[in-house]
Length: 269
Image (cartoon, rainbow, N blue to C red):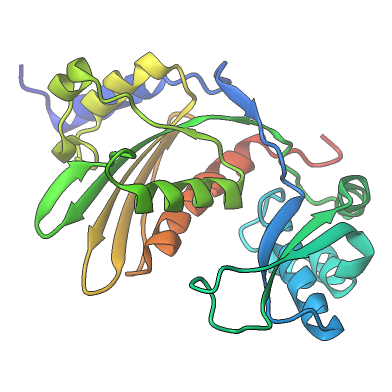
């Protein structure tokens, strides 16, 4: 059967409606107000800097805004970041992970109630900890070869994807890629202009959002391309060539922006 361009668009819109916007697959994301990062030392100055960075990271995964740094309430909170700290703890870093001997891993937990009260009083949109799962189709291209991401044989990717999901607070699931699925979809269809088959195969997972991505190895970095199917819309973006963790984080940032904009709630609502 031959489809005209107009019919393809209509059919794609119909397929997108198969993705339940208020899908049953949701998760309570734990630890949204906790974060770990590296402090240059345990000095008061370096601790203050690390806590400010930690608060920015937490706010960046609970607030609804294109650029949270432009929000006055966020700027004020960052200037007084230590007032929101519930507890913090240092730990040693493995010698092969960081070169500075005085550096420490610092885990910071912020006071959720106090932080939320501040943001609500400023009428800033907030995304709660109950978040729908996103199905992620990921293709890895290296040395001219494309293949589906396989956590069993790609531990570096597994760690980077898990970190990106945690940093943005976006719970993800991966396709099973069982024999039936491998027969129904190929790597070339993940970012194809025709997404009908991708969405048809994805419907078995009963999730509201599907993200398709391809990361391509270039000279010492990874270039990412992404498509996000949600709420009967398609959002596409790319990223500069970045280290692997940053490349996957750029993909997750795009997913967060779309989901938070939809599910985030402002106080008056």
